[in-house]
Image (cartoon, rainbow, N blue to C red; front, side, top):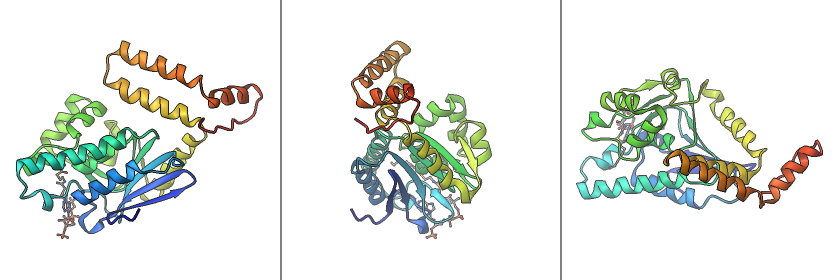
Length: 258
Ligand code: CO8
């Protein structure tokens, strides 16, 4: 499908999705959110890892599009927020691992997009934050909830109440990003991490993601039950038989995702 504001490139089962409106620092307008939702819903089944990054050399995504939001009504804001939530929830629930390669500003909706990915890596020049209160609003694409789950309630409150931007090192210190890389090595690093996922059983990786995601919002007993179910389900797969047989035969496994 042809998109206006995003680019999707697929190489050896790893998809790189670039949000590409560099003149507006890749800000998320409705069109871009619709394209993201459509791209997430129509990823080829051959894709086994997704990396999201920003076009140009300044921004990952500098937020929701302020020009589009400036004069909308409450009802339109609800619709706009619903669109963002839908797109990010679709991303979060993809059955494959997703990585945000934060190559510059990840503010507001951009930080929220990164938070909807499984892993976040950042370049040395990245700046992350949720500055919505400085615009008289609050995060509206899941930031109040996902940031809290990642860095804890008190840190999330500090970041959201101050609206301050963190540099990459500070973001790593509080656990908002996993690693900080030189700008020219960020994408290669993310691809190398994705390549490690690809060596493993695709059904197992997918099941692990599902159990972690759905379990995180439940009490420990219910969450562990989810794990037990996921574990048992995999014993009906060819990959489980191949993985264990390959170990016993001292050879690499040839997983097929079946
Ligand atoms: N929306 C629209 N345009 C933007 C945005 C944005 N979020 N960010 C930057 N731009 C545009 C600028 O207007 C400018 O356009 P132009 O060249 O036409 O004047 C161009 O991008 C370049 O930006 P700057 O000249 O400002 O570049 P600087 O290097 O000086 O500054 C900053 C970079 C610091 C990133 C600065 O652009 C900035 O502060 N941007 C806004 C950051 C922000 O506040 N983001 C949060 C937005 S609110 C949000 O995301 C809410 C999400 C939930 C929505 C729920 C819906 C109801």
